[in-house]
Length: 348
Image (cartoon, rainbow, N blue to C red; front, side, top):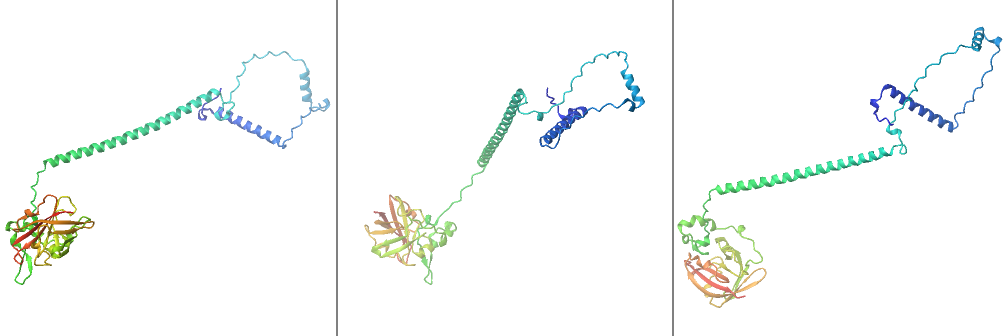
């Protein structure tokens, strides 16, 4: 039977016995290797020495031999003792080879290894499951926190008072573009008298608009106006403010483009200053045609009607049915207390 006790549970006598066995096995193995190598010659059996002559022996030895030869009294035999149990040397796992290792022990060892592997797999799976649960819980907590914050923000916004909107009045909502007067030196200036006194502070910032603030042109922006009857072929500037009309014919920024199916394209120009492009605008008649060009196409318009209105009649800027154009200029020449309006419709 194998002794599976660990080394620290053996007694000193058992350890000494194990050490003696190991030393004897090593010594025998070494002698066998040396004998196979021819390094040790077997010792001869010693012969028994011949007995020495009696006269040559000492007297004491002679007497001892005589006593041995004399008959002796029988001696009582000692009671038989129980046979001594053979001492079993402890054996360890490394003492067994694959052939000597019990088959049953190998089976249980394989079973234990598989059980340990299964325990490790279950432990790893448990750790992965716990990690997944922690990740899911963190995401859920984040969503709940975000929803709670959103609800609280909506509640705070619901309790906030509504501010009254600040009125925004544009210059085109008060007076038609192009109005101007002359100074004593003959220079032109914007006619502030056309704007009601109560509204002048609100539209003051729109009287002079920097050129750098104008919207950039697109492929559908009106670029050029051509009126063959009036010998006009002039580029179009975005805006109808004072500075824009210095540069040429201005387009009111109402979002309308020549290619739109519906919309009123409003173009304005001076009649007696800064090129006098619309000086002879009143010579157009119903049925006359003119053209507006964009980056991609040229559109044809035909005059449908015309009339003279007051500077504050901004109703002419409104949209009409279909794609239309409205041409505006001050009137009459050098007086400029009215506006001359030409209405046209797109025909192609």
